[in-house]
Image (spheres, rainbow, N blue to C red):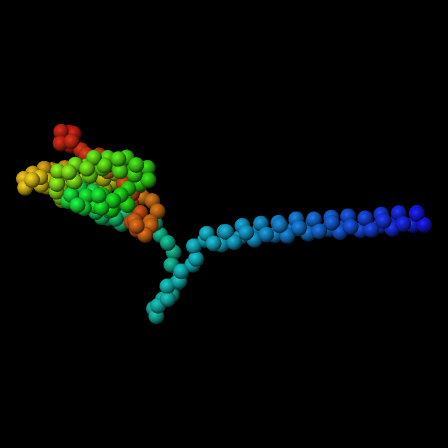
Amino acid sequence: MIHKSKQAWFEVWGTEVAQNRFLKYLVIVLSGLCVVFAIALVFVALRSPPVFAVSSVESGMLRSAPVPKEYLESEARRVITEYLQRRHSWEPKTVQVSIGKASRFVDESFRKSFLQANETQIRIATEKKIIQKFYVSSVTVDSERKTAQVSGDRLLTVDGFRAVNSLSFELKLRFGERTQENPEGVYIVAEQLVEPNREAK
């Protein structure tokens, strides 16, 4: 009787071990399938969906093409003009808001130094009631070198006195991601005031 009970026990134990081994293999197979499905889902989600143009004359699939150089430079000129006008055109009450709007065109690598450079300007403009207007006269963009040369006239008004002088800037650009705030995807990486004697060389 003792021999039979021990044999029955080992038979039950062996059956349990076999079932556990089978369940482990099943879990491994299902986990592998889940990984494969997850990779396939990510791959499909990252693919751009096909877009078809349908008309009464002809229908076909639209393919994305690289943006022409002329378009990039035109967008860059538009962004640079708006950036400089917001950056250098303000009144005492609007100087902080205006510079804040200009900062949306500033690249992250330049943002910290940009904000620090404008702290003193905001304080002086507010304390001394300075009004400044900047009028862009020419913008030259080199999309290959990612630089821009800008010239214009600055009009300063302090205590009713006005002064006009010409300014030239050299900007470095980055063509990056297009966002809702910056749909052109043109970002200012650096801004440098060009001295008149340097410009003449």
